[in-house]
Image (cartoon, rainbow, N blue to C red; front, side, top):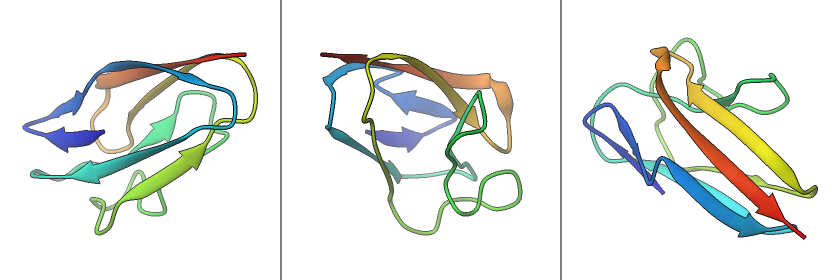
Length: 82
């Protein structure tokens, strides 16, 4: 996945349990954090990503996330299936 022009590409993604998603900043000043606060890029809420951020999804479900800087106006969803 990548982040460019204030948008996560793709904004929605379906993966399987155990897969890892990596977000790479192409342009702008953005970070990544889960809506429930269980994971976040090291610079969430204060600085833009300086290197790609990865998270492994170990349980099935729907996981909403947003930019830690711009909040819910810049968001996405990861759906994890068994």
